[in-house]
Image (cartoon, rainbow, N blue to C red; front, top):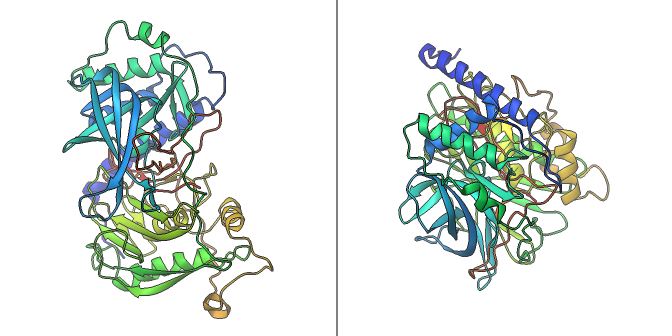
Length: 472
């Protein structure tokens, strides 16, 4: 039996319940996307105030801006593609005022090399888009706080969140942000005439640039994807489980996706890898990396060509969270099999579904096991890789090798909107696939029916967990 750390339990449980209540209320009370905005409410609810306050706490700056340019390039060691978005600041809500700034996101597309990279739970930006963003300073640029959770599109005086699948009156959001900044002793610089200024902004939808690629999928009539694993987790050997249990959890994930009878698609374990960082290297890898508690619990990256052929996929699991592979996660631990099952779903690539019981739901709570695919998960993979004659199961998984999962998700499922210092919840946002030129960046458009994508475990106060996703 695993030893239990009493000191971490009660504060974690309290914060977890608080976040669960907050996000559940926020999701239940949020207004659905509509072409005609609903009238604003009189004041922010306590739950909204809590969610925005958590974003403010991690932000060096909160600005209302317009995206004017997006340029993709390799990072310094050519291991992944990044995109720099130039934003012209309309006005500043929190922090030092600047006329313009650069925001860097993971992923992008390089037309000259015909290669792109999608990164789960990464916010998307489209040239011409009006946005409200929470930013953290990072070297010569900024990063969005809590990935997609920290980016709102602004349309018709509303703050539209693909992460929360909601839109809220900008007046309500701005007022709440200012109140949180004052409470936290941060500089609040919202100009007194900002409402007048917003009235002059053209209320229009943003039409993203033409996507320079088809929706990606693994090529071939019967794709068989080989996956390598590095068991380099520091949690192996302690109460998180043995190396054998860690590997078994990951192999179970490959098996679970592969035995969907209606889908012609197989994932096969291909032995160990020595890689300790993700990057384009012609191998599909699952590794463990310390990413800090302000980063997601996990992240999936998909590499593709302009004709929609996936070339490679990687997943990293964040070592800075408590990970468990013993089949008995405690309330401050993330179930490894559940995390990897969700992230590998983004490899296919599936997006999030709005069904709490589904593996591809954007939220996973600490201590919860979710290892059985729902009808929505199965329908998604079957649509991408249809089976001509059911069942389509590779011989590697037939007979005694075929899993018959009976475990259902345990614990309470909730909606949380950020990364936590212990498990948090994941949501999904469309990864942007900007071009190498400063004007063509495919990204999420603000439409009446937005799509949420990458999920990720986002840390804030310890408790729930995010899972990253790549949307289709």
